[in-house]
Image (tube, rainbow, N blue to C red; front, side, top):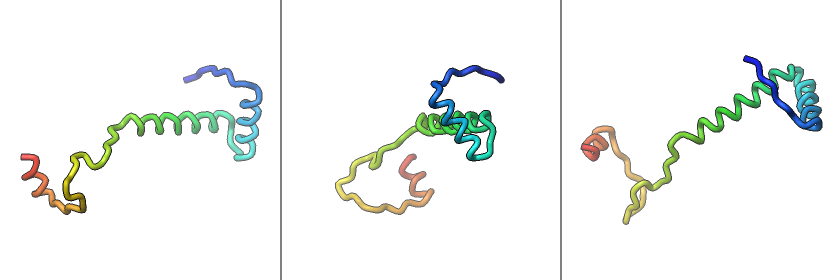
Length: 74
């Protein structure tokens, strides 16, 4: 798919120089940058959990097996 973007001249020159320095095409550098940004946004949109989920009066490490977790969730 094709699209057109407008970049400020100084940014375009930096981008073109970066592509040349890496021995890549301008298209490849732009595509990689867009893909990286899309991946970052995708990761951020996942559920972020703050720990502890449930506060404890006795914080520490609790080793639970899958069976223990099943019993707790039942």
